[in-house]
Amino acid sequence: MTDWLLVHGRIAQGYRVASGPSTDYPYGALDRQRPLFAARGLDLSRYFNGTLNVDIRPHTFRLLKPQYTFYNVEWTDLHPPEHFSFSRCVVRYAGSDYDGWVYYPHPETKIRNFQNPSLLEVIALPIPGLTYGDEVDVLVNPAEIEIS
Image 1 (tube, rainbow, N blue to C red):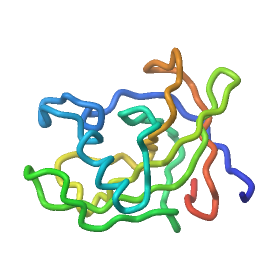
Image 2 (tube, rainbow, N blue to C red):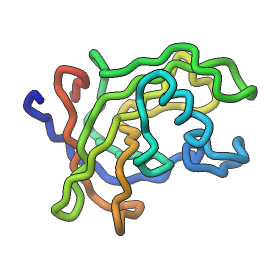
Image 3 (cartoon, rainbow, N blue to C red):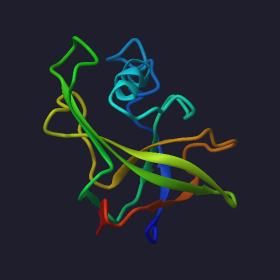
Image 4 (cartoon, rainbow, N blue to C red):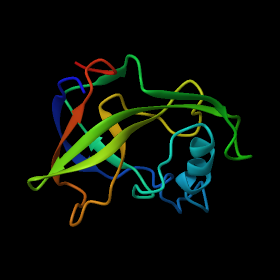
C-alpha cells in the first residue's frame, strides 16, 4: 500500500439516511445498498451498517481515482439511480485503527441531500465508544483522494 495521508476531523451528526430510519427514508439506505455493492464486487457485510460523518474543516476533499465506482445503482424507487465511489481508509480513534471505506454518493446523482465537501462519509468496522463530537484521524490513499 502507498503511504497514507492523515486528516484530522470530528464526528458530526448526518441525515441518518444510511443507518436509518430518517424522516425521508423509513429504512436504512445501506441495508438496501450493501447487497447491490456486493454483487458488483465490494462486500461491506463486516462493517457497521451506517456511515461516520467526519467533519474535516477547514479542509475539503476531492476524489481522484477511487478503488471502486458503481454507476446507476438502483436502490430505491424514491429517486433515480445513483453513482457511488469507494476508497479504502483507516479510522484512528483512541489509539486503535479501524479498517474502512470512504463512501461517496456522487452529488450529481444524489438529489435529496446536500453533500458538504468538508464531510467525509466513512463506512468502518464497529468502533466502540465513538460518539458525536469525538475527534478522529482518517488515513486516506493520496492517489485516490486529495485533501486541500
